[in-house]
View (spheres, rainbow, N blue to C red):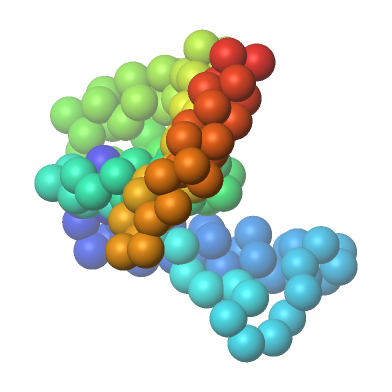
Length: 142
């Protein structure tokens, strides 16, 4: 919804810029090369394994600006878009959605490491099996 139009993307960028500016003033972010790159949301057709982890992680990092854009749309959009956006906003702010968002991010972070290891050309089978066991143990601890 937020990334669906150029206007909404511009609003999201403005909200992100305000968040970054606020964090820089508070000293919560460092400045320098490659440290504060613009985050984006994955497209619906992007199904590579890493993209799922990246999407969840970016959604968490961009949660505040996304909610700001939803708030703005609820006030300023046409009637139909207001209804859709208000539904998304109410759903996004539920405990269940926030809990599942963080849970999926943690689970995908664990399995993402395995994915990176398995994509390497030189694979040590013993090391790979050990990593699978570690990942299995970490997932069971969740």
